[in-house]
Amino acid sequence: MQKFILAAMLMLPVLSSQAADTESILVSDQQRQMLGIESEKLKKIDVAWGVAHPATVQVPNDQLRVVSTAVSGLVERLEVAEGAEVKKGDVLAVIMSPKLLEMQRDYLYALTALDLASTAVKRDENLDKEGVISKRGYHETRSEHIRAKTSADQMRQLLEHSGMDEKDLENLIKREQLSSDLEIRAPLDGVILEQMAVPGQRLEALDPIYRVGHLSPLWLEIHAPIDDVSSIRQGTKILVEKFDISGKIITIGRMVHGEDQGVMIRAEVTDNAELLRPGQFVQVSLAVTADGQSYRVPRSALIRQHGNSWVFVKHPQGFIATQVSVITEESSYLIIGGPFKGGEEIAVSGTSALKAIWLEAGE
Image (cartoon, rainbow, N blue to C red; front, side, top):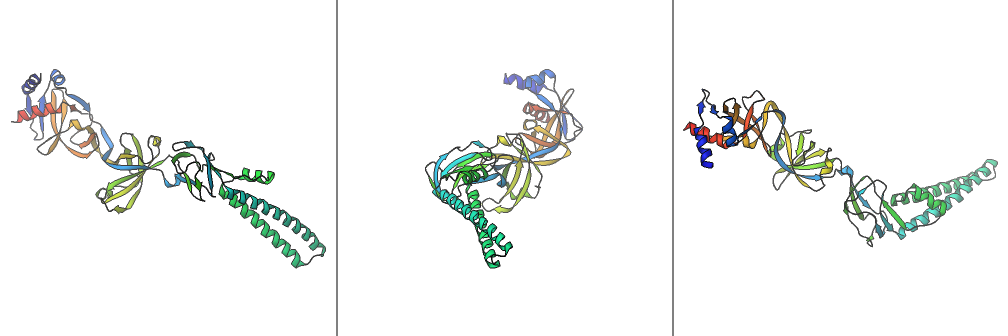
């Protein structure tokens, strides 16, 4: 079968054109089918995608939280695990803390002292109006009231910082019932990225329990050679290969990595960001602005001969070998420029057979 096809190829007539960079090959429809030659229309493009660079998916800093306990205690239970989606305010863990009991007790004592000081200042205020009490005695009572209020406010703030919310504090005041259980709540909507404690573990104040992140938008930390950085600008579009996710560059690093002389470029992606995962390695292509006379073609459409690049442009009787220039390369396509008007058809398969016929005719 291969010998038959080769013989058919050699029988195809080739007409040399007067132009030095083109040659015509006459191919019938039957011969095209036999040689597996298929063609596609050329389409102009406005944006091309350059060589892919390695990148790592990261959570933006302002969307990342480390959840910790504000007071020492024992991890009584964990309500969620790595990978769980959470809403702001959801209970993530419960810590049993004797320290919390002390703080609640001190707060109730401070409220009692404030109540007594408030009663005393009202009494002395009336006595001062009647001229019964000295000014010094009245001012001392007022100072004691201010100290009591400041102390109560401080105790309340400490409990708030420890994790007790407004409702918890109101219940404590109303019922005067102490509890050693501290509920640790989610600070934002997001996903548990890492669990950093286990039930039964003893924790000190500020020890981490979870790492939580909001996963839209996401960052891509792109590692680019320093020689490419001069042509990159903020706002340049990027494309995550294999995911068809686009974004834009938001920062260009000023620090050169000593190991390989690379620079970190940060891009942001919003649409379809849920398809990516923090820590994932991806390949990212940067947009290259086209001049309006550029065309995207499959790699199979291009042949190389004597250091030049060629495509076969379809015409009614066959194909014309036409010299082109390669502007840039994408993962599966090439961006070319040439003497085209747009809308021409070029061979995208069977080009090896056409090249063999073309070279045979030139011998």
